[in-house]
Length: 169
Image (tube, rainbow, N blue to C red; front, side, top):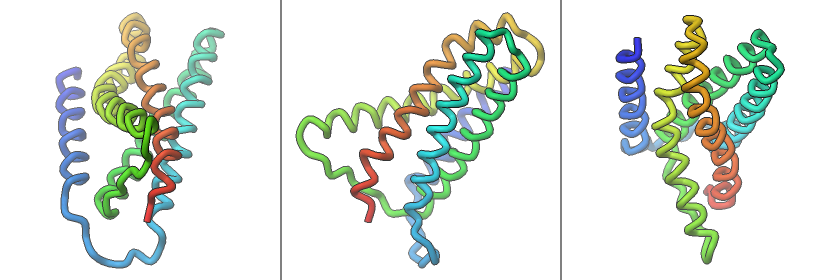
C-alpha cells in the first residue's frame, strides 16, 4: 500500500504542475474566477482548525472525535486541491506586487508552502492509511511529523491568499 501511496503522490504532484503551467483557455467564464482562491483560503483555514481540533481530541483520548476531525481535514484539503487545480488551469498568473521586506517574506512563504504541500501529501496518505488499518503505533509515529507540516501548509495558504489577493486583476 505504501508503494501505491508514493506513486499516487507523485502522479498528483505532476498533474498539478502540468495543469499549473499549461496554457490558459481564453474564454469568459461568466463569473469572477478570483472567488476560487477566496474559497480555498476558507478551506485552508478550516483545515488548520480541524487539525487543531483533531489534536485536541486525541490528547483527550477521544479517538472517535479525532477520527472525524482528521477525516474532515482530509476532505477539506481534497476540496482545496480540486479548487487549486481548477483555478490554476483557468486563471492567468497573478504577480505579487509587494515591495521592500514583504517581497522576500512572501516568496519564502510561497516556496516553503509549495514544497511542503507536495512533500506532505504522501505522509498524510500514509498516516491516514495507518489509522484506517488500525496500525496505531505507526500512525502515531508518522503523525508527529505529518501534523506540523500539514498545519504549516494550511496556515501559510491563508496567509499567502491575503498577501496576493490585492493583486488579482
